[in-house]
Amino acid sequence: DIQMTQSPSSLSASVGDRVTITCQASQDIDKYLNWYQQKPGKPPNLLIYDVSNLESGVSSRFSGSGSGTHFTLTVSSLQPEDVATYYCQHYDHLPLTFGGGTKVEIK
Amino acid sequence: QITLKESGPTLVKPTQTLTLTCSFSGFSLSTSGEAVAWFRQPPGRTLEWLAHISWDDDKRYSPSLQKRVTITKDTSGNQAVLTLTNMDPVDTGTYYCAHRRRYITIFDFWGQGISVTVSS
Image (cartoon, rainbow over all chains, first blue to last red):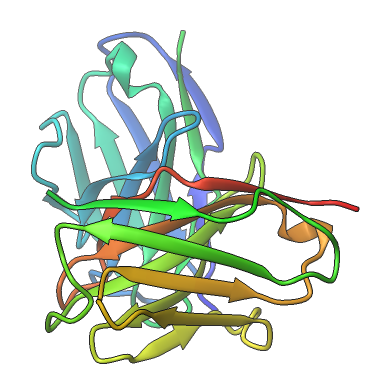
């Protein structure tokens, strides 16, 4: 199974800050990387697919980059509504696996 | 608009079989390219993919659960059912079904989830 390692596991930042979350795959997953946002008590919400494609309706504050084994999710200007846990997920091959999550809070 | 909703028991005893139903609208599992997946999330932990079923009845399972899990779809194409045998307290968590975008493994719509507790 491919292991997805996210860092940091949590962060606290001020409104307006630029925030970056990283995701490392245990082997090359090409472009097969998605990012989800999950707010407490809610299901995951797709933010970005195939590394850098912004899902329809998602704020342009969110962007993704990377290739191979190293990927990043960036929030250009953190807003209060961005408080959530963020997960990366690969789909290079089965089984699909998720990162451990990054909890984002407002300082 | 695609919507999904999970239903089933919220409390099961150890060794029992869990059966969850995902009822959805806005697409059909009879349509080429469509698929539905099941995931779960233990309290405070990350998401785990369990299984998915495609329009052509292709079924894929998590290797760690393959001996215990089964996914089926009904003939109307509007429900997907997950069964998990020999339940254990470690199976406690929130179970989600999700729509897989046609022909690509992106989960773009999710049910609200159902919280399942395994306890005697």
